[in-house]
Image (cartoon, helix red, strand yellow):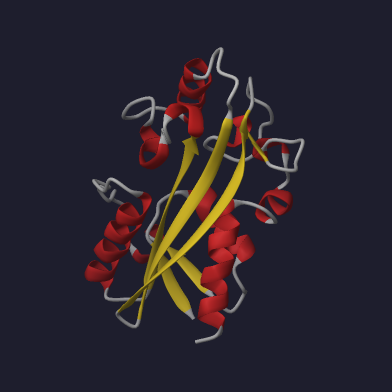
Length: 191
């Protein structure tokens, strides 16, 4: 079974491929000849995932899926949320985003947060949505060198290491994206 993943993020693709059943072949946008970006004007993770999936589906008329993920921090009223990738501004780096979060949380005791992933699948012209979540807290400083995004400043509940200090297998056993991908995989294998 082949699916197009409506993302250019190689980190996400690597995580997906390590979690999905080997009978499911995931093609990146580059694999199918699309090198552009897809605008994400939605105000929720759900809207952005749907926008990206529909864009690629309308272009290639193939089964496809897209995800949108974000970190929601309680003390920041759910920020950065849907703006997680560009929290520190257009063209910002992962480090810029992490620095902005740590700066905004200076002196704040409540550091609880959650990572969420929403996957929007278009399969045989039908729409399906899968969600994964992991709760945790924001650290005081960056810790670890693996992973991407907010991984160096997020410790999942029940853990002592940030996502960036974990191996890919450790992260994939508990991450928000892994939970959503598992739901996607289970759905596809039961088709």
